[in-house]
Length: 80
Image (cartoon, rainbow, N blue to C red; front, top):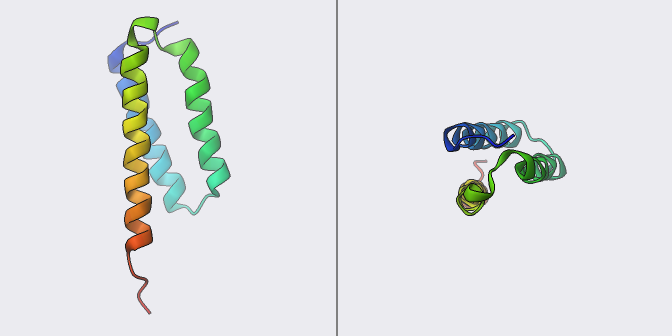
């Protein structure tokens, strides 16, 4: 069953929040990648064909947001 765009936005926001939670908890990168993989795989069942291009652009935006966070953390000097 395809979800509406509003429902998909809610899912993307939940994904971003989950990624933040996992990152803050120090979860291994493999586990974080598994969450992303699950999201990608489940999209074949939940995203209508008409919304695929939109969905992928939104998903890439979430991943870009995550990359920016990781790069920012890596650039932050560690206090001693």
